[in-house]
Image (cartoon, rainbow, N blue to C red; front, side):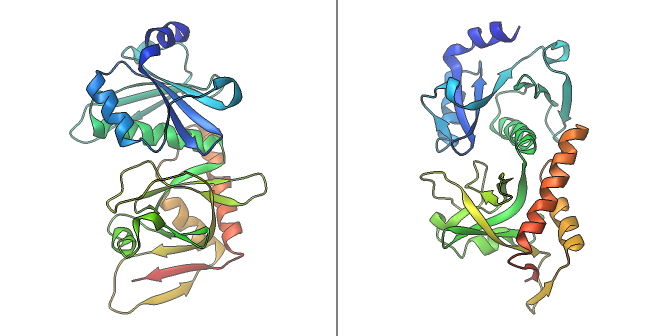
Length: 267
């Protein structure tokens, strides 16, 4: 089945970089050419024209209208978005395969991409974090917080070339337990200037809780910081093993960050 789908969609194949220089999606899509052009343009900093699949780690992502009878994938995730039809996703991490169905709508496609991106990150000791990411001296500062906590307001004070995102930042922990991040492919209210996509080391984390007239900085202990971090992870899969991966990674992020201190900042 998978081989036939891949062959059928070969001309509508898109290579998409998800973890710099190491992990990619290979999308097989049967959307019309205008929508394919939109996808390539929207994510152009992350689309690779030519990729030698024999030399990299990659996941096949297939648009499959008959996902309900898919026999290739053993895991199921269903995302419901208000005012839209269901987005359906099934996957097999052993086979490095995702099947999904959604209509040709940029918001739906972006939502699908965020979910499967998060699932693969969880496999590779990472996650998407609700955060404004700011580049500072070849490293990065995270200002973590939910909607309306001030992420975009803060990011507007910086030049686009110093912004990773004002909404969702990708994070991974490498084999040396260093926390690495990079510019996000997803929508950002504040303009992001893309160029060469590479890793940056995380230097500090600040947790934003909202606004007040007086600025306060309170030091957190590890447990408080860990719980706040979990609340701001975009997507935690239902798969038990992947969930454990996310929890372990979140703990390692907190442990790593305590070397440079953790802060709770109320603006």
